[in-house]
Length: 130
Image (cartoon, rainbow, N blue to C red):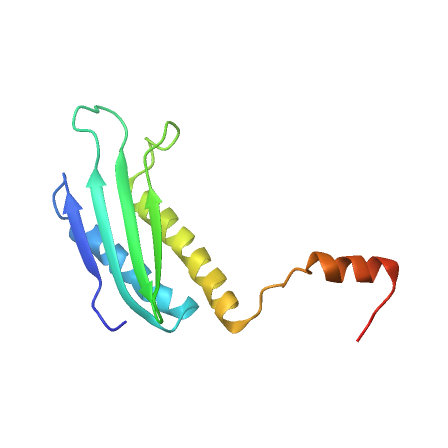
């Protein structure tokens, strides 16, 4: 990465083990795409009055050369309130890895190209004109 990973905490105090987890996961992103320029991670506790559960919001912004920006947001939904923060972070980075793989495949031309309607009609009728 050209720019070091930026981690920000909002509404909760800074935990060194969570920050270490974020740095490890951000380092793994380079295995999937070798031209990652920057990675910004925002971790936020959304509800202060919540007595049970861990309602955390995680947002990951990754910039990939040449001018691609990928964003993953994990919001607390009804079933996700009881996941620990580390699990929410791992799920968000898993989604980012899938997006990076998809982008890399598109850039390399490995994705399947769909036929146009005209090509499809020609293949059905069996008439090919050059």
